[in-house]
Image 1 (cartoon, rainbow, N blue to C red):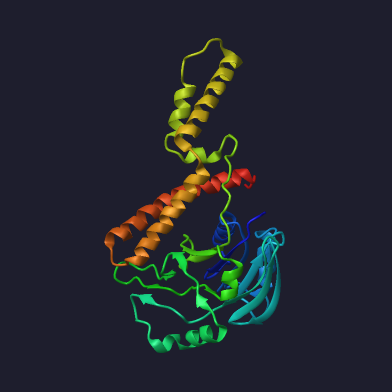
Image 2: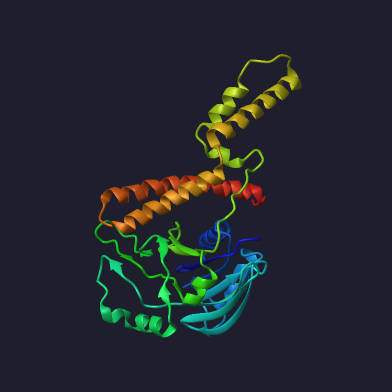
Length: 321
């Protein structure tokens, strides 16, 4: 049975290819079959072009009413979506997940937050949100991960953290999906964290077969390893036979280089991304800690290096120039 998880993300604009790629990466890593994207900043008439160019095998709902604010996305192989109500502030829909069943989903933009830094939130600021919760008979779903879900990413002393994004459920949902869980995670392209709602564990991805990878060139020791092997005087014969021996020797050196130095680039990318996200979450929990600020900078650099290698790996896998 295939997994169909859900994601909600205030992307603050998805007109850039970098953000579109980040959305697809999050969906792929978390086996997302349905998602709601907020504050897309992409006009309704431009959405079709975005999906035709980058979001292959994805379907979407957009209209002039929800234009540049709310976008619903899903994969037909996982779910069927029926829009029941749309408004500039919300989209109400019915989702039929092939593996588990159907439920109603309500995605919207609300003023309901708490904050660290900047002007403190007053009780009157959350009156509308509290009334909506009471009227809808919903409670906030207990989530793991980052508490604060937005940051202005300013320097120490001026940085503000707020919890702008939340998940709400009712008793029917908890009865239908008793093992569901939600987690807020930070990504590298947005000032908002995203939330993944899971209903079951994800399967582990198997190992990839060996092949020459262009991202090896990004390793500092790559050139030295190849040149040392190529300049070796071991072997016999001359001419083309000698060149063939050199090529075979380099091949074995690269196999060992891949195994002992490079390792699993996909796993290393995910670990670097998790460490960067964790560093941001730690800073969000203690914004005044200078050491945590430094940790964010260090992990960001490490992640940037791994992102370059991972991107090169994906380009070669998909034969993209």
